[in-house]
Every structure is written in C-alpha cells, then in structure tokens.
Image (cartoon, each protein chain N blue to C red):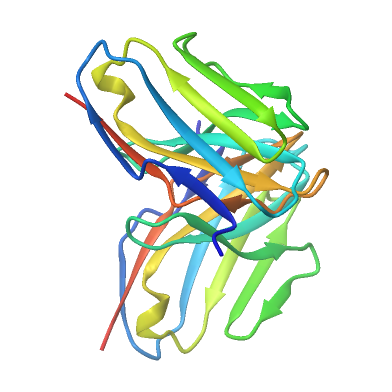
Length: 112
Length: 108
C-alpha cells in the first residue's frame, strides 16, 4: 500500500505546454507539500497546504498553481512550461505540527 | 551563503569503514534537525532526528552543536546498502531546508 503516491512518474513535454501532476496520501496527514529537486540535487520547498489551506508559498513563478481538493490530495498545475522547469517534483505529507515528512516517489519532468 | 551546507562528496569507503558527515546551518533560530537518506532516483526518507544530547540508532550516531550550528552523522561498520546520498535537514518555521547532500559509496 503506497503511502504517498504521485502520477505520472515520468512526464516529457514541449515548451509552452500546460501539465498537471497529482499527489495523494493515505496516511491521514493534515499537511502536504510540493518540492522541486533540480539537476544539482537541491531539494527546495515550493508550497505547503494544511487542511486544504495554503500556508507556505515560496518564491515560485505564477505559472505554478497548486490545488488541494481535500486534505488527502495536492495537485500541481504548471502553465507555459519552460526548459528550466525540468526537474524532479516530489510531493510529501506530514502530520500537523510534526517535522517528519513522507515523500512520494517523485515525478521526473523533462521539458524539451 | 547556503542555508544548509554539507561536505562535498562523493565519499568512497570500503565495507566496514567508519565514515562521518558534517553539516552547518546558517539560521540560529532553526528549530529541529534531521538526516534524510536518498537512494539514487528515489525519494528522500527520514533516517533520524538529531538532538542536542546526541542520539544513536544502531550503527548511526547523530550529534548537534547549537552553539557552532553544526550537525554530524557517523556511520560505523558501513555496509554496501548504506550507499546513498545523505541529506542534512533543518526546520525553520513550518518548512524543511535541505542541504545539497553528500554521496556515499561503500565498496566491497
């Protein structure tokens, strides 16, 4: 049973396209996150939601828009994809107020 | 200056060796500290939390020095399966700040 799942696992698309990545957790956690890991392996937080409310929004282009339909799901929509968006995007979740985060398997996005 | 800095890798060690990783963080108000492990092309997983008093989990020992803003991880009797990237992580407010990671390769 996968705790944090993401779809798709791989995404190859052309510049200018719009794409979405979905994330679901079955751990009953209240808080979910999106991270970006670039080619230099730095893992940086993008967004955090607690019970469907946005609580962290790092300096991320407006082309990135997270959506949380319920506390078990956090999706990421990206408009007008650029070459620099190529990276691995990880979803994560944690119990509210706790530091330990559980990561999904990642979505490897390649923009050509 | 990076918020969390780690030793550059890779560390190549033989099985059975003891290896130590170091990490420094820039924000003295950081609240919690962790080591995560990331296998190649996989997601990060929590290895252990780090406490000021130092803590041990089997072959792994973590230390924190708040005055020096320094965190360490010691792996004793390293195994082939320890080969991975080790990420130093600090918590600031509601978010985790990750270091770049140190790659460890344990050879037979």
